Amino acid sequence: MPATAASRLPGSYVTLEGDPAALRAGRRLAKVLGMTPLVLPAAAKPLYHAAATFSATYVTVVYDTAVSLAIEAGVSVSDARAMFLPLLQGTVSNLKLLPPAHALTGAIRRGDVATVKAHLAALPKADRALYRLLALRALPIARRSSADSARLAEIERVLAGED
Image 1 (tube, rainbow, N blue to C red):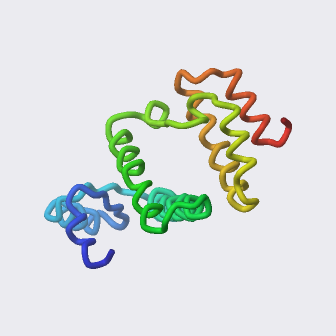
Image 2: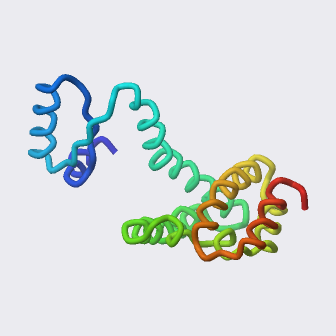
Image 3: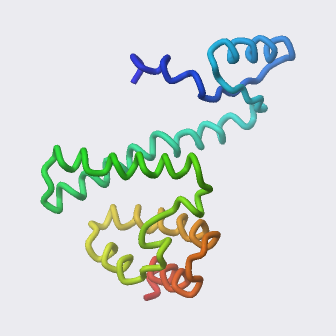
């Protein structure tokens, strides 16, 4: 929210580009604001911005999808909006301490083929497509953990529609 954005500047990162004088000025300003400056070439800005979109905008989209699915399952709007916040906060806390392979939880991480199949069967078509895409991105993360590789291969077949 714009009204509280300034209070979140300390501890955040800022990317800088420009000539040496501009970089020096940017670093000084970042230090005054309690921010961490990173120098990136101009050509890298779209990729960096896309990464930021994944970490903020798309987390909001996934949260909204979860809320909508809970409402569809019969949960009240107020409960649906509240029930996933502790999960999100726990995930952020885990990611502060652990690499993604150790912070990952859920059916993919456990190699729980039956639950993945049940999820896919229960989801509306558009949400099923999003689930498949995200699950396919979760698989390599799960493979970096101690997850059972045979079960992950079976999940991958299920997600690809081969099972």
